[in-house]
Each structure stands twice: as structure tokens, then as C-alpha cells.
Amino acid sequence: MKFRSLVFILLLLPACVLADELAGKVVHVSDGDSIIVLADNTQHKVRLGAIDAPERFQAYGNKSKKSLTALIAGKHVTVSYNKRDKYDRIVGKVFLQDMDVGLEQVKRGMAWFYRFYQEELEPEDRAAYAQAEDLARRDRVGLWADTKPVPPWEFRRRQ
Image (cartoon, rainbow, N blue to C red; front, side):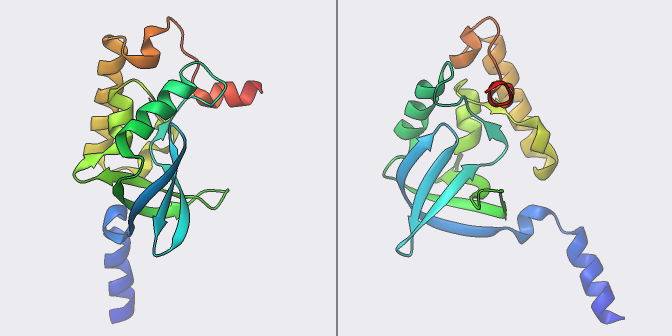
């Protein structure tokens, strides 16, 4: 009976409480939402959760990568995660000190808030990402300067 109660309590805890952490140096920025972090002499491929940045050959793809590079290349970050994607990349929130790097990319108009995965976020993070995208769109920041920017998931589907 005690075991079932413990399991029930653990299931009620928010996902972020059960998250793993990885701390290390960003040794490569692949694109606007993917990096490689060196931790304990091991390279870890990391996908920034909750955002989707333009693809390399898409409008703003290079600008998005440059933005992320300027933010975190060569710096020490912490990744809070609880899943891996189909490519075995860690998917999580990347922090540079107290800054949520994915959120910063959205604020800069260098990525979309990837609403398809919004349920994986805490409600306050969901609201922050949505607001950041709304403000960037309203102010025509970054990719929102285009009249009809194509979301990366649509760009990939067309390829």
C-alpha cells in the first residue's frame, strides 16, 4: 500500500521536478535550436525544447544560428531535461546562468514557440514563450520582418 501511495505522489509531481541536469561547455552550435555540450569529457547533442528555429537553407536559418552562437558558443550552460528525441538528442531547457536560452531565441525573433510540444512546459513557461512570440511578431523582430514567414515544420514537410 505504501509503495502505491509513493508512486501516486511521484506521478503528481511536475515534470521539471523529475528532470535530469547536464552542465557543460557549448562546443558547437549546429543551428538555431541545436547544440553540442561537452560535459565530463563526453559530447552531448542537445535540442532546445519548446522552440523550432528556421532550417539551415530556410530564410533566417543562418541568422538564427548566428544569434544562438553569439549567445552561448564557448560558454558554460546547464540543460534541464527529461526526454530524448528520435535522434537520441537530449531535449530540454538550456540556461546560461539564469537566462532561458530558448526563450531568448523566441524574443529575438529567431525561433518559433513550438506549440506542438507546449504541454511539456510548466504553465508559466508556456505563457512566457507565447508572449515572447506575440511581442516579436507584433514588433516585426527577426524572422517576423517577413510578411509570411514559413514555420520550420512546414518547410521540412515541403522538402
